[in-house]
Length: 473
Ligand SMILES: Nc1ncnc2c1ncn2[C@@H]1O[C@H](COP(=O)(O)OP(=O)(O)OP(=O)(O)O)[C@@H](O)[C@H]1O
Ligand SMILES: [Mg+2]
Image (cartoon, rainbow, N blue to C red; front, side, top):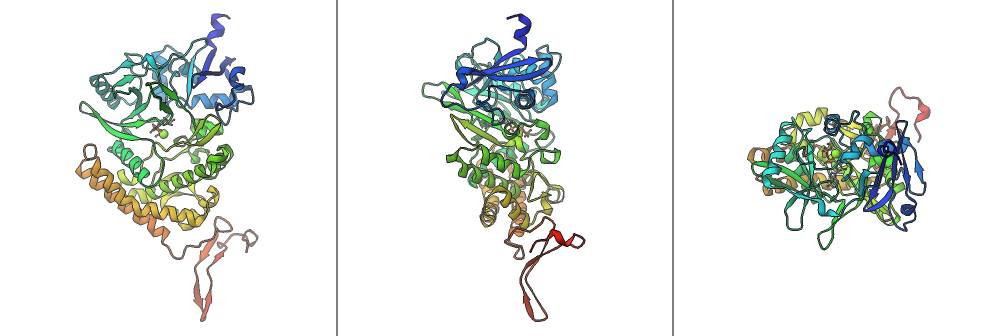
């Protein structure tokens, strides 16, 4: 093997097993499963879009998949390329340096390297973590611990870094080989209180029946941070940390990160529901479908306007696949003025054909239920319960988080939740809303009424100007 050839090969490990090799040739990257990995009786594929029954996968599947392991921010990518002396910030070039601790069970290493056990961590003092948080607040592209060489890669736009917490509670920097266990976030630059809103929304979601990653607000010196527990890590007795495999729903569909929003040509609710139905294992299917439907309802109820395809994931453990716990949740109703939420709020995915919060009526929920493969009456019931519980859940959670959520913020969050819940309940309680699914997206529901002394039942009517043939009885 020549030196040159080695720079074009990276090994990909899944939970400590060599899963295969990434090979670059003429600028294109392919992936070939190791025969030993294919022979394992119960082990996950790298992706739904890269099944292990097929040995070699081409660039159309592999390139978007590995690209999705990296930060969404091009600034962070360019920074990493400069830091490692790479001329071009391609996924292959960057993962050679930062791929040893990725989302899921993935470790990408130079060909021939062996991943060490978790012993490679460097202890971090509170002073060092606080300093890194200050740096990230000054410049939200400074994800990496530049001076100490911490290695991890995660998706997303927001400033963040990964840390490992020992069984004794002490923090360590993942040097690459050992697994990080937590993700430290500071909120969205330019959107004040978004860190608090994320913490509160995650906590509220759990109260409202969603399965959500653990999250807490921590202080390092004077620096607050939202610290999320990784659901793709498993602490074993004795202190070792195992990696569980996950992939986001863009990865599972073989899509680039640029297609994470439906409005940019990405997947919608129906596409994701179909993916979940296709990918979830038999025992996990009902739970996954219900969990996804509850999340879709939650995002509508709370104005969770950033719930795109990379903010959902599949968890692959052994040969089972389920919907991963929810992460990266934020209700816009907490941080934006109520009028703005109502007038300009748009969901990341259409609900029953409609992005605009103010355009969503009960019939859109019914249509969404249809796409989700759940009963419309159940879906409405879930949304109604969530809307009824949302304001009190917010006021309870903010009361528990008084250090991060100060008095005026607590008041603003509670007021915002109440207003949004009122809007959602108004839609749900609209007595004229039909319980059936419209025959076509533009059909109009005519509520029951009396005419010339006779009762006319509620019925669908063709929107004026649409050809008669498109309306079914
Ligand atoms: N609790 C968690 N456990 C495991 N992986 C997680 C967890 N939270 C986030 N991730 C991974 O890290 C990625 C980035 O995290 P997250 O979505 O919270 O960041 P973000 O920058 O706010 O994203 P966005 O650009 O969508 O706003 C996720 O896409 C997911 O792969
Ligand atoms: Mg995200």
